[in-house]
Structure formats: C-alpha cells, structure tokens
Image 1 (tube, rainbow, N blue to C red):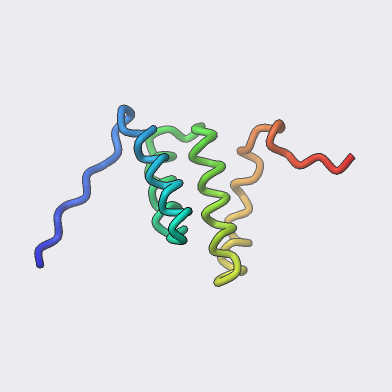
Image 2 (cartoon, one colour):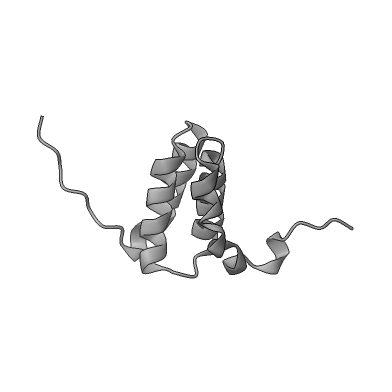
Length: 88
C-alpha cells in the first residue's frame, strides 16, 4: 500500500485542523492530536486554541508516560490568565 504525502497545514486550514485534533482526542488518539497542534503552532505560534488542545492532548498521554508530559510543562506560561484555575 502506498502512502500519500502529508500536506502542510495552511492558515486557511487551521480551524479544520483544530477540529480534527479535538476529534482525535475524543477517539483516544492524543498523540495524533498533539501532532496536529504542533503543526498549527508552527504557523500560528500564539494560537490559544492550539495551545490549549496541545496541553490537553499531552495530559491525555500523561497516564502512559508521565515523565514525557512533565518535560513539556514549558507550554503552561503561554496560556492566557483567564484559563488559570482559581482556587479561591
């Protein structure tokens, strides 16, 4: 079976890519969701939806590989403050 070459995500395709990433999370394929989010962030580094979905996809994988998820905590400062949990 021949494989098709992957097409890069374009700015016009970001919304559809993020929808697909959410679907991958819902079907328990967080590594594919992570990959899509990283592709989106390569062209839109400040995309908050991609950052949030990426962090959720990484946390979905943390049960399998907690050390790997811990190494990606550098992403947390990129999330805007309104997403910070409130413990008041």
